[in-house]
Image (cartoon, rainbow, N blue to C red; front, side, top):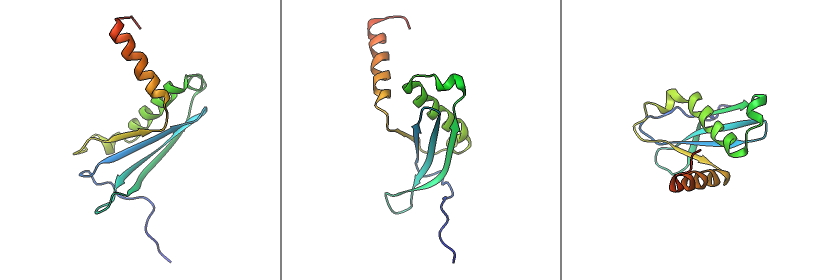
Length: 112
């Protein structure tokens, strides 16, 4: 009748993985951690939010960053005292465009 719990207790000595995804109206994220003795990850926490009307008008790469920021703010208590850095995973290639855009501006010395 009883089964293993869905959520795992966080272990500060193990690496966290923060995975985010964005829709036009909101964002979702999961915080996972490697299981002892295997490379599989178990769910530690999950988070979702809706964007305000102003945030819903952001470009897609800005929404992706916003999802990451909101998730980090939500799980700050888990992530701030980590022994190892955490990894952020997202599925959007738009962030690659944003990175290239800024690198071009830095190289050319163009103001933002």
